[in-house]
Image 1 (cartoon, rainbow, N blue to C red):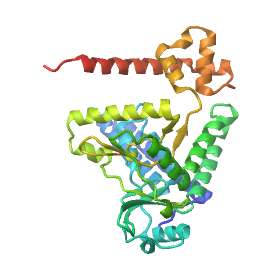
Image 2: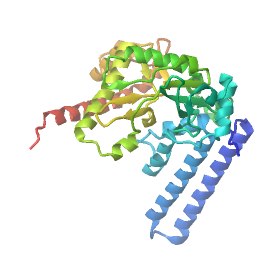
Image 3: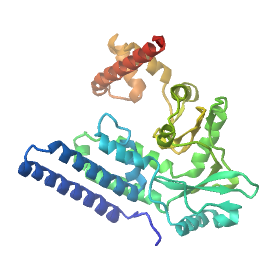
Image 4: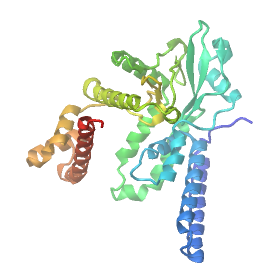
Amino acid sequence: MVKKIHSGALARGFRLGKLGLTLTGSYLGYQAQNLLLGEERRAERQQRFQQAASRRVRQELQSLKGAAMKLGQIFSLQTHALPEDALQELAHLQMHAPAMHPALARAQFKSSFGKYPDEVFREFEPEPFAAASLGQVHSAITKSGQKVAVKIQYPAIRASIENDFKLLRSATFPGRLTGHTPVAVFDEIQRGFLEETDYLQEGKNLDFFGARLGGFTYLTIPRVYWDLTTDRILTMSFVEGLPMSAFLGTKPPQSVRDSIGSHLVELYYFQLHNLKAVHADHHPGNYLFQSDGRLGLVDFGCVKRISFDATDLINSVVARSWRDSEKAAQHVLRLVFGQAVHYQRARKMLPMLEEMAEAWSKLADEAAGRETIQPP
């Protein structure tokens, strides 16, 4: 049976509503157990409830794909806000989703490229090796013998994203009326998600970063095969490496882990300060690791162009320059929120900047301490 994306607004809204009711019922049942069964084994019951609820959410988001699954990926990185059981379940969304039936994948390829995969490639693996929120990736061999990765977009994925955000806006309408849910936030997230459905733009992003990060010898970025690419099909050179969880399962030595950490920080700040553009989809599924510490960076659908002076902002946060004067505070807040920001409203965000500066300071102190401590 061919599996399809449920793109209709009513169908997706019904499934999300059903999920909410199911979780509500489970929670009421859990609380009833606590009342009827008393304190004994309460911690165990709480853990079982959290595990079951987290698994149910993850399974439904995986099935829905699109914006719902991408939001789940974002939540999977919120280690400060969600319990461990929820984080472990949502982490599965970073690489795994139910794949399209091979017949549907072939049909999707032909509808965009005009030919079936087996007419275009010497070899094409019908089962994907990766399936995520917007598309799935197959390995293939070109007619000239190169191993490639072929990303095929799910059917009607743009419509499903648009419908999901209509539902989200409807659900948050009271908050938007009171100003607690800024419209601009939803507009920006939706714009970013829709941009990721344009594989021609992603190909341009790959070319941009591949050319400008080519000097980092430890980094591999896929090369685009433009003659085998459309707005819904992206063919790239195959990048070797393991996802983070599998890589850590090989128990790499600490020296390799430290090297990878240094490389990731170096890459991020080089993009921020020098390129004024950042590979902005940082979930672990987009990084591939090799035993010698080399990195592969994939999935360039989400790229953020930087319009402000990032160096100035970082220096201001490190120095906490907003404490110096109202003029200095205004300068920092305009760097963060843009020149047209309402200063008195934006000033309420200064405590958050204080927390950020404090967190960075602690991390810097810990890093410096580790460097100065000599082994016994």
